[in-house]
Length: 302
Image (tube, rainbow, N blue to C red; front, side, top):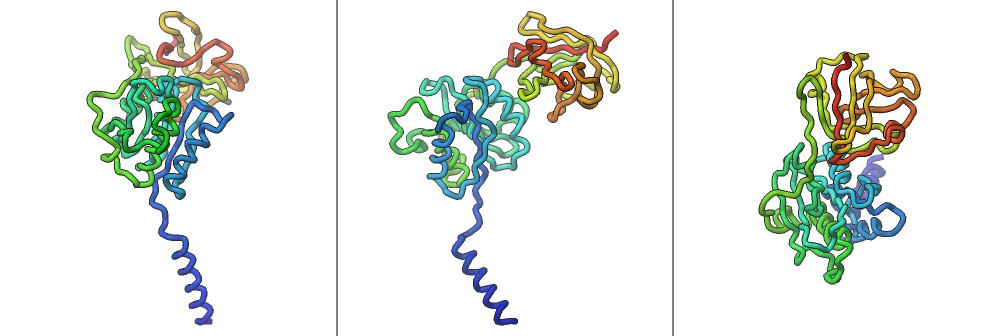
């Protein structure tokens, strides 16, 4: 029996020796507006795999609407806090690819990294989590070898390559490049606030699968109106100065608290005030979209 135990232990040790040490790599998470119809995302992952074949790679999304830096910025904000410190995000929504816009790696105050163009992608992260430091990518050191004459696929040639080197530990954050002079570029929009007995805010994104309306109004602000479940509120939605929707809507816990097809105010998974039609599409029904030009007001109904 002891001989069998020693033999099994010897085999286990040989297996562990051949497997090598456990990977200490950070996760590498990709976000783009490329879609998955062609090989662009696969090329980025191939570059990262070439840097380190043990890198754990994941997708945030590749379905950001084409050129929508704004939505890419929000999806990062929506997702990042649920990944552990050290995670490296590569976010490429880059309509200015090949131009003078900067390329950076940002370190957030809670220890995550974002590799991205400096084009507004860091808008929400800079405001909510905060940026500990931002470095400009030195493309003389951190560019895919052989891609020096390529100007239209920085996602593959610069961002995936740099992100993989950082996540694998091949380079440190300090080795990315010099500290950025000045602030990152951000996109202006309406911040949430309580004023004159109402709460105001922006509609940053839609819950695209269901057509629900997501605002940037946190529950702590809405609570200043002293709402109770079942209370009704006057809601108005604007695109710039044009009123697109107005109506009286009940505040409830969840969708099934109202009949099918009826509107409701609820709090989404980020605990931000949201609107929905139970079993229907609020945005499609009322012609509502999202972005920095969209705003919302909510006040108690009289």
